[in-house]
Length: 334
Image 1 (cartoon, rainbow, N blue to C red):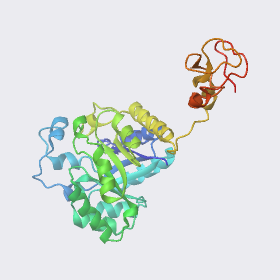
Image 2: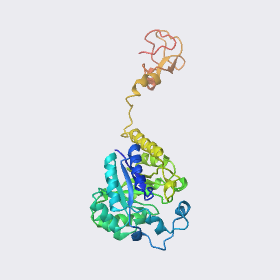
Image 3: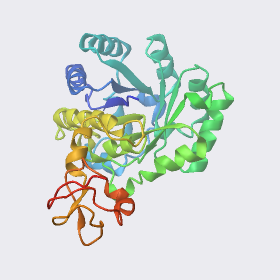
């Protein structure tokens, strides 16, 4: 089954449409399935007094508030229309996360809500959860900062508004940019699957590409990863993002893991069958054996190739009389 790979452009366009379009081209070139932006009205989601996160303080101007920072990263309706057209041009799906009611309505009006992403910060926003669920679309539920009780409450709210659990994919996530490796806790993704019997995925904020690839090996069906054109650009998320070459490497790694996972049936592969007689052993004469001599541990051994009697038949051969003469290293026949 193919993993859905979401290249998270997020707000890494810095409010510059030319940069946003370059991000779309880069995501398509890397082989991602979707490129995802963020849709919001700053004044609807951030109070004037809201502080910045520590990682935002390190990557943006100390003189601006979170509201001022976020306002510069808004995308207008016209911007969305242009980005949707650009995605069609490059053959990659457009996707966006809505952070407020009006933004959700905008995405619905634009016809780009084949599924709905609930970001970690909105996991406990019951009015928005209800509005999102009532649209009847598959849900991606990101779980940064959450425990199992938080996740259970969100799932129950979603189900109460008409969405079957079979349409919910829960994304394990750690809301820190970048996430320290020791705080990833990737096994929690498996705990989520066991606790709620849902499809699982992983929204990644670690540096590098190892963790999302490992998540696929553990069963993630969806991977979301931030990317940028340049990690040194100004803005809150660039430093915790992959550059285009790394994004392409991640996609290749995930596709390789998909092929490597196989169907779970243990059997010789087509390519290794030819090596079976070469690598396995047969029962052979340890030294010259005369006809009628009894086979024993003193005159038999096991050596390659594996085209004769299998050593697993050792007990059946020991004690029998040699039907003819055998030279040293000759395959034993009965």
